[in-house]
Length: 159
Image 1 (tube, rainbow, N blue to C red):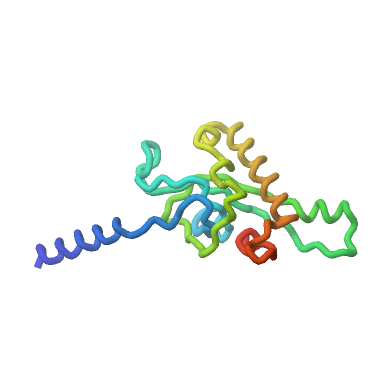
Image 2 (cartoon, rainbow, N blue to C red; image 1 turned 135 degrees about the horizontal axis):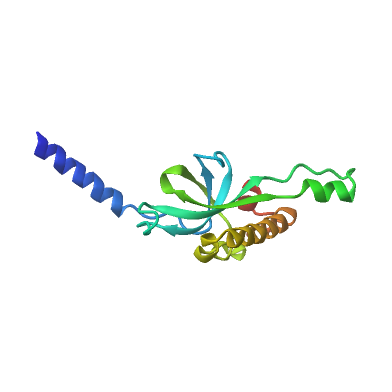
């Protein structure tokens, strides 16, 4: 009985490792745990085999903590700029604590340039990365990049 169970476990583990990696840079994910639970983020870099500091599969994500609010034509310029602000976050997340979506951000957003490992090592670097993500996200929210048909990209609007 024990041998049969052991063989079953090992075959399941082998099948799991042979499965394709679909959480890659640019994938939109939903955070499931912690302070940002329910918030959407973009995968910046993946660490499938883990690292020395984090010996488990994880990824670096950049996301939206506070999304822009609805804007109408009647609003003043000052109110529009205030309501279209984005509050970003940048953090490492365990693969178990994120849920991938079907959306992938366009390559022109360049998710790999949003944040680096060196920036994440220091507090100043994290602040710098957040500022860059904020400027990028606000720009893309105000003028979403077009998809193949010329309409605004659903992937960026989903964020």
